[in-house]
Length: 272
Ligand code: ADP
Ligand code: MG
Image (tube, rainbow, N blue to C red; front, side, top):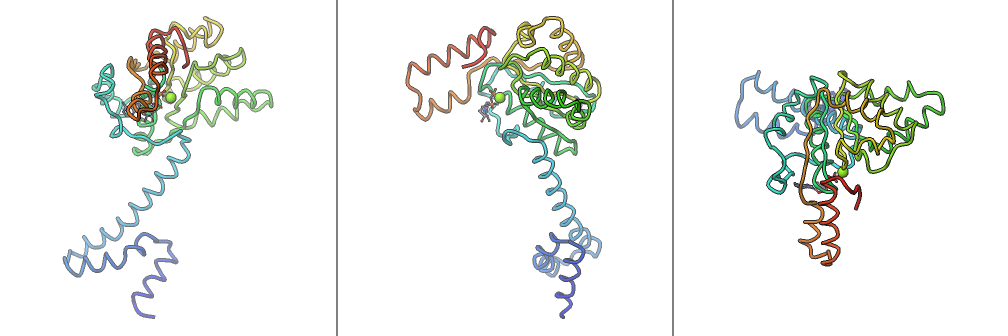
């Protein structure tokens, strides 16, 4: 075996796959640039460390159960002037995660609520925090089943463990009594312990109708809003804009969607 073959075999034994994959390039660059021993060693070790970090982030992103992956770079703020970019910059520092504070994104369909929630989760994951995303409906269905099977406490832990929990699409569907109670339990248990990023098409005044009970709605809002940032997006649907650009929407549909969006932002209707 040549020394290089021996090296490759050892790299394989130690599962140093990234160094193995870049070995030729690493050696060639070193021969050309003649770095110090320390620099060369650092370069080699960092190759493996970076690859591991990427793998770890990828795994965390997969575990987060995001509906899609979008970042702040992909968000066109000029399209939504109602968003205060300073507020977004502050959120991007992730202070809210360290303070276990919440973020509530409100607005009609298609204005970027889920996109911004996902982008914040991505930032948190890049910073080494765990995030998990679920629609309000799926969350309550899952916990309702656990309750009926007598394992609610155990199942709740899944939603208590990540530092960031996205609860998407709150308010599209009303919750029954059990759903409301479970939701209250979850919000209480995360209160001052972990952040919730919640997206909703409903204004706070309409929360009574989501829960069918103004008292429980008030109790939930009380805990949710105590340490929180609300981002109220009053704008046009980005989906609508994209479809219009592609010439896919007949005029009367376009007007109907616009109307639905504007009534939504005043909170009178909840879906398209
Ligand atoms: P909702 O407010 O209903 O949750 P989404 O956040 O899912 O809407 O946005 C709908 C689609 O439009 C997504 O693909 C999202 O990435 C895109 N989108 C929304 N707003 C913007 C924006 N300002 N810039 C770029 N893409 C946007
Ligand atoms: Mg959404």
